[in-house]
Length: 130
Image (cartoon, rainbow, N blue to C red; front, side, top):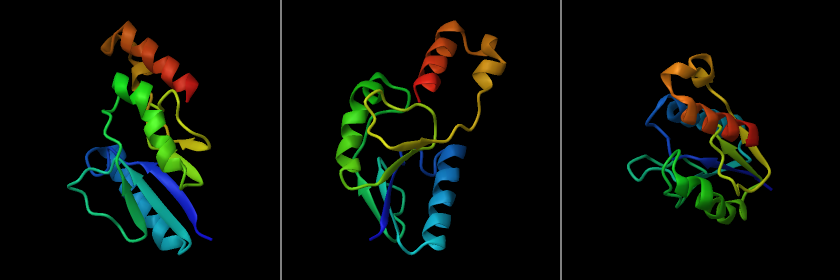
């Protein structure tokens, strides 16, 4: 039975995180023929890899909709998956488990004056919850 990994793919191919996720996905598929990927929120202009499936998930990154409704949308994806991967620490409040989070940088904590108190406080709470 294949291992099904769901990925929050909304940044796929659009940022450094999206590039990381696309390359990681290609490497996982090449390394193990029993892996299937469920790409949640993959942008329509991005090609689907072999052994992958697209799943709708359209809440914007760092939006209130993502935090309040995104977890419920991801529950539908997780009904078919064994694990969920977030390529950033902005995990929706009601995100299903089990999940893995990759943290790429914490620059807002190194230079908080560049981001402002509110953004740093939100980032700190989001990271702690993830």
